[in-house]
Length: 313
View 1 (spheres, rainbow, N blue to C red):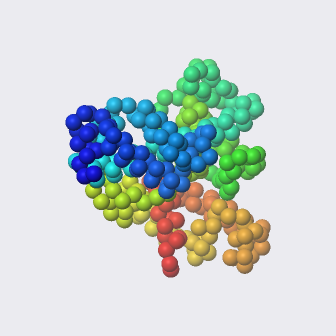
View 2: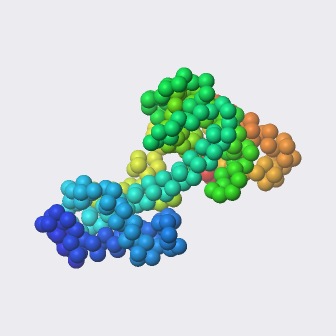
View 3: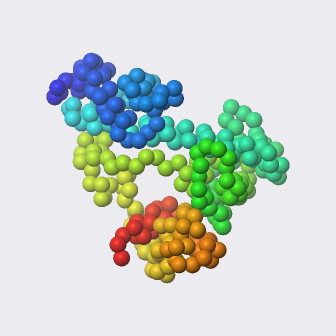
């Protein structure tokens, strides 16, 4: 089938029978191998579920999608890789959008029941502190709010449930960060933006992990050096190295277990639960201070630290 689907696209400016066949085949491959949930109303990735996904993707992307496919590919092989990347990225966005909606409903209910916060009605719901002047709206860069979120210290989420009641410690952490972010904003912030800030601060909605073999242009990716798929910048590696050097052997051991129950970690340290919990709390606080004071992206530095902790001594 070499050249068939791509030649159709070049000749007609749209997908023909061969192009649709290729798109559906790649769609089934991506949907069934990447660990993403099927569309609402489907219990599994049936052919109908895949077709629904592809229809939704093309409808949203519009004519530019096919134009991009044509401009970035030269034959059927590169077109197949382009389809794979596009479908995979769309599934990532869909998964995050669905989970973000759940997160928004979760914290909006808490904000609505707290007199310190005020809902601002509109086509895009916003939240403000009651102390904010009426009509004050935040219009800055999202990174500023993420930075403000990281500056709220002493809070973390050790367990995140996707259904059921939210644990008290999780509620406390969410509310503390939302309060700090809104104080820094000085006005109403879109609910969607607040959700993105919480995602970044607590890394709540991490998509399914995978290793891509090809870039959009069809070139083979070197997964060890590709920036988009996990390489940590040199600056972050340097900062992580400095933090790592300042950590004790005990702290280095604990780094990979900070999200675990102290009762389970206590056996590793051969200490009691309370003492283990206190040590873990102190390490979290120490890391939070170091990450926010470093001047680099805290997430990139944290990723570099975790990578070091997983390496053999």
